[in-house]
Amino acid sequence: MKTVISTEDGQVAEHFGRCPQFTVIEYTEGKLIKEEVIANPGHHPGYLPAFFKKMQVDSIICGGMGQRAKMLFDEAQIKTITGISGSIKEATDRLLKGELKPLDNVCDPGAGKGYGVEKTECEHEESGE
Image (cartoon, rainbow, N blue to C red; front, top):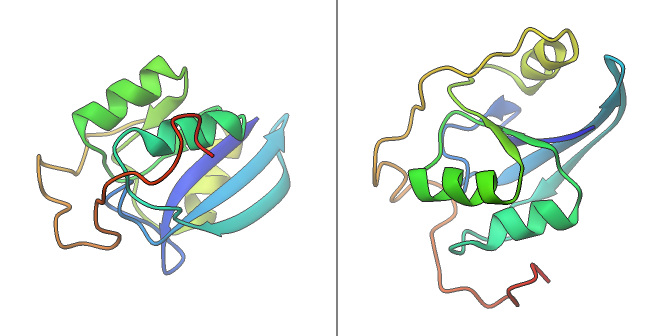
């Protein structure tokens, strides 16, 4: 399994698309296989679902995300787990133990404006290249 966690300063970031980094974890049978931190490739409408689908991501962990983003991840068959806070280690440990449950989305519409990576026009191909 492969999960992406919105990341800022070692913590689960509140705003998924605008976080500065993502922590990508791979695991099987409750054991962590690999953990990697990558820079946010940009907050472009519809880009991140295609980007993570190409990486074969199964789920997303974050504090919150907009409804359109959630819909696009649903269409890409990537599960979203919102309402998560705390350290990346805490979130990873809870996920591996099967104890991580979605809570209320911490993002209100437009709440991410001015936070982290700004939304721009997409310069990427639709395939997520």
